[in-house]
Length: 212
Image 1 (cartoon, rainbow, N blue to C red):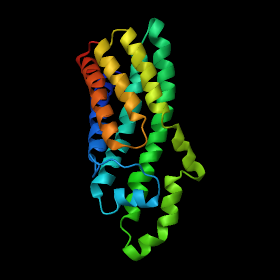
Image 2: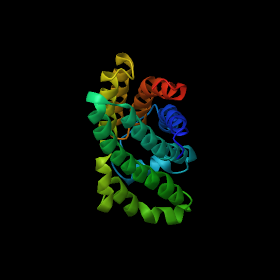
Image 3: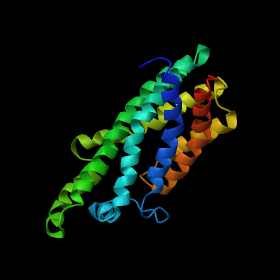
Image 4: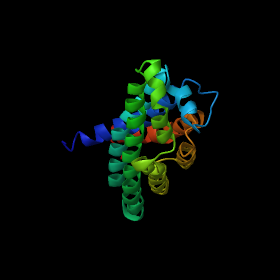
């Protein structure tokens, strides 16, 4: 990519990804009536006949490349004593982002396909849905999702120490990242994503303005 374009792409990505995450989480059909997904019936109640559920997960899926671009660029602007925060945070966070892409890809693509089945055929896939809820087989990799907020927290600490984000905004961002690490409760995730906006949107605007 042309080096002159990279700050613009990185800035736009940094501004956009927390906003897209917020939209994706906030689209949950029963946002203010959260319920843990403990079995296939709980999962079916969340997605069956609810296209906005699939749209929300699709938005989170789309945010992943923007997250990767943002993390990658952030490590280049952290220098000196904070350089290690940028590099380590980017490595851990990008691994977590790849896991997130797999998680949301499975949910927004596979479940949306299941949702097209007629009732008679749909009932026969309950065991498959239960295996998804229990994260059987290679779905166990999704237990690594906390790597994404962990990597971002490490970078955010470096950004605060380097003065790239105000302390208050950075702390709000860290709190938001902590809230994202929850048992799939979209109301909590929405609040977390909103807090991310307070840190990342101003940071992205600084990149776009050429201040960094």
